[in-house]
Each structure stands twice: as structure tokens, then as C-alpha cells.
Image (cartoon, rainbow, N blue to C red):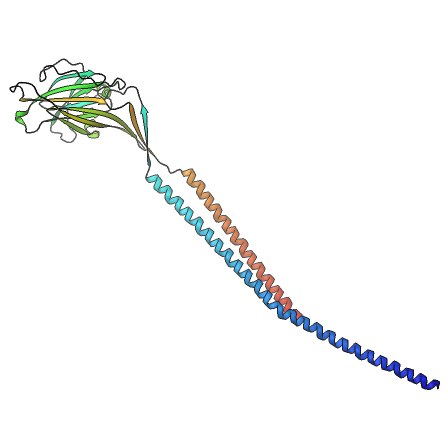
Length: 344
């Protein structure tokens, strides 16, 4: 009885051991199958993730290169624009106009070329008041300072000219003016007029060593005007000083009005045509024109330095971008080699 029970229990123990061994083998067989399936899932899911990361990296690289090219193009355009603007401003100065108020001007020189006409009178008056004419057509007393100069003109060297140079008005506050009368026999000519010229300072003529050469230079540099017979021509002068790059020039601008003379002389005396001229300053403002070169080299140099700094930054940015691309490429190759080693 004892032997049968012992054999029975032994058999049952063996059966349990066999069942446990089979179960263990089954579990061991399932675990490797499970682990393999999880790795397969990871491997199946990993390529899209790697692909998306690589795509993003490539897109980001292209964007960085595009930004570098854009910055380089902008910097080059700014450099070209700065240089071209500097050259344009250097060749085309800007005109600056200012007005300077004065109490009196330097007496200008009024050069008159009467030809065969005769100067009857020349007087200074003030406050725009000219007294009524007394015995027009006849010589009268005057108080003007007059200098007569004979010279050969700069354009017609063979013809001698006679100029009566009158000291012009000076007191602009009291509206000083000069009133002149001329007479001329009009029977010899179809038209009659007297030519005159204005220059900056009467004292330049009196102080010059050679008055003929001085008048020749004035005729070469100043404009000529005329006033007609039978009228009173009122000339209002204004002085303009122009400062250029190397020299300074002075010119006169004028506004003139003409009034007809009502000749009340007897018919026998009306054969001599009368000329009347009034010279006065228009206002107490002297116009000064300056040519200003707005091209500042230091400003242009500063802009170019900024442009070159931008180019340097862009080049540095490109260098870092290339280094980053090389680094990412090496990392990608290293990861790929590691995966191949794991598979093998």
C-alpha cells in the first residue's frame, strides 16, 4: 500500500512539473514573440518620424540660406544706392537763399551810355518824392557825383565808348533816389534809347588803377539795360550775392515801371526828345544765394560702415549655417551607421 501511494504521488509531482515546464516554455516562447512584435512596431513607426525631422531640417536650412541671400542683396543695394546718391549730391549742389536786412547799401555804380544825348540834370531826392519839373529840356543844377570814362569795349575793340558813371543811392531807409534828365535830337534816328549798366560799388571804379580796364571787365560780367525817350523809367534795384564753390559774384535785379511824359513845351522845342530815369533801391533786403553741397562724406562713410557690418554679420551667419548643416549631416550619418550595426 505504501509503495502504491508513493508511486502515485511521484507521478502526480511529475505531471505538475511537466505542466509547469510546458507553461514556462510557452511563456518563454510568447515573451520573445511579444518583444519582437514591439520592436517591429517601433521600427515600423520610426521611419516617418525620422523622415519628418529630416524634412523640417532641410526646410529650415533652405530658409536660412534664403535669409542670407536676402540680407546680402539688401546690403549690396544699400551700398550702391549710398555711393550713387553721394555722387549725385556732389555734382548737383543745393541752392540756399537767405535775406539780410541792411540800413544802407554801398553806393552802386550806374554807368550810362548816352551817345549823342546830353545830361541835363542829376539830383538826389528822398522819400520817393520828386518835385515838379522846372524848365524841362534845359540844363539844371545837380548834386550827383559823376565820373566820365572812355574805353574800348570787350567785344568791339575798334569802337571807343564813353560812359558817364554816376554814384548811386545808398540810404535805403529814407528811400533815397536819383533823378536824371537827358535830351537828344530825335531827327537823326528812328528810335532813341539810352543804355545803362549797374555794378556793385562805385568806389571800385574810383579806387581802380586803370578805369578803362575796370569798365571793360564790368561790361564783360554785367548785363545791359535801356530806357526810352519820352517816358519816365523808374528802376528799383535789388542786390543778389551768389557764393559758389570757388568764387563769389554780385548781380543786380531790377523792377522797372514806365510813365509817359506829357510834353508841354512849345512845338519848336519838342524836336529834342527828353529822357527821364529814376534809380532807387527796392527794399532793405540783400539776397544771398549759396550753393551748398549736401553730400557729406562722413555720413556716407558711416552708412557704408553699417552696410559692411551687415555683410559681415550675414557672412558670419552663413558660416554658422554651413557649420550647422555639416554637424547635422555628420549626426545623421552616425545615427544611420549605429542602426546598421544594431541590425547586423
